[in-house]
Length: 429
Image (cartoon, rainbow, N blue to C red; front, side, top):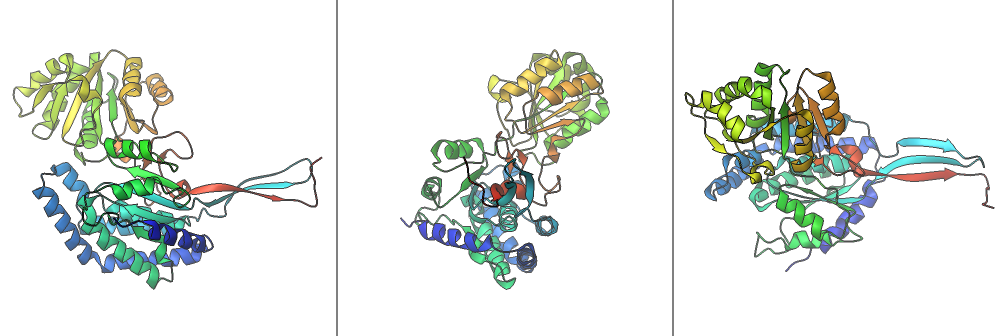
């Protein structure tokens, strides 16, 4: 079995040099990366087509194949994300705060690179570029460990990134692909993951980005700091005062636009008095597009319309409330109050993205205050939780933890602080 140790050493050495680069040099290198991605798009798309074909042959469901797939439009979006990162202010060296102590010492709190980061992620080859661009701009080296399903895509993308960095006078060794190299004879092995998780002194932080099992594996086995990104068991709660026609469109968008992503809605909570008016509209809107898994009351209201539409309606189980389906499946539960909806979300949610649809300002404010999640919406789709949408250009993932960073993670997520203290001969008595 090969070791990733040479990569750890190379990344560490590259980060020391990258931390000294100014914003102009980093932006020039990233602009060259964007050009290389555009230049090599045919190679990237060909590699991605091989991954997609292999995934379909292996029985991967289409919502997850969609996460894996690239096309010209998506590559344009990836390149645009790099360009947004270039335009953003360099956080390194930014003075966050400063003050003078009574003894005359000047204390400044300054942003500095986090160091060497590793990200362990599933499918989505766009993550490879997003994380590499953000890390480079933040002065961090990054080790990318994608899944075997996206291996060919990631190889082609990282080759383009490194080529672009070299052409732009950048530090190509600051970006590395684990490439499953810890066990080349068994590409499905996760021995390299275990090596990353125990790389104390080499990797400063690891970010898991994927499903429940991946995140659990990283959190439970890591001996290095973890920035946890949670799965997305997201909810939408509908009250009687909501504009129901608009509510149906919001729900459909949150469920159908890209069902295989972490900010798609998985459970709909409906206040009892809203069922009779909402469910027939929703069944008609989702007819032939999504399966509903309903509790007794919502099923009864849904069946009044389902008799004339090809909507699959099943009885919900307790397991459904805690499941991130990543598919065209929507669980529906009846609640008696906003308080009950909040309690359900705080019990079953993953602290990702939650929404309330209402015109009641008191309910909206209570929901915003009491729901424990990184992003809380009023009268909007949960699908907006995204670093690109929030103006970060790209994102490392959606942090669901409560320290350092939370929600979509951009450049500042890869910085930490250093205190700089200037004196004039002071000594402590």
